[in-house]
Image (cartoon, rainbow, N blue to C red):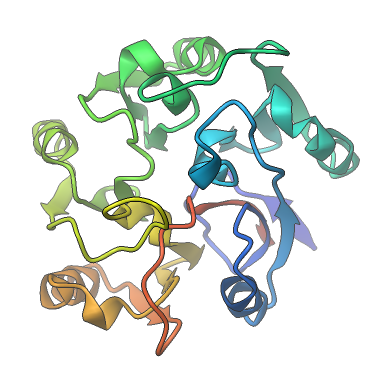
Length: 252
């Protein structure tokens, strides 16, 4: 018997189904090697083509069977509906090309009773959900909040952004700030830590590429050990920001 994740991005058991937009076969096969099925996003033609497949620009899962998707992802609607999900479509057809920070409407993070994100960029329906469920908004300067945040547990995360780190400390999270530059993102100078990994079980995290090559690997390893979070990575492969993934279903 399987169930929807109660808390977004925080599985309590082995993850069985995710939404992911990567087109990298090595990474997709790596994810599948953990017994995880993948629903793939389609390119979002309203954002930069280099990151058009990134899940964190088109999908937001607030928990349970609720999910919000960009209108460009309507191909997902039937699949998600068949799973018994309550799907909310956001955005307007024929919208103009969105550049930063307009492309960050889904790029926010729920942690506990807080929503971390750049207030002026977040999709209105996500803000409404937060208001209706007593989830407090924590406004940060970084629009790519989800990209920049690697969740370890409900009270801990790793970030490569100063504003997220400072707000995290103020809110009482245990968090560390690491340097940028060690994560690859094709067409850009670098990618973000939140886009190159994620939890696939309680206290079990995977990285898309060799995390040992990160300039702050020792800091990351120590922090994960502190929180009893074991990790695995795709060896002999560059660490890549794929836009993360959205875990939907886990074992009961």
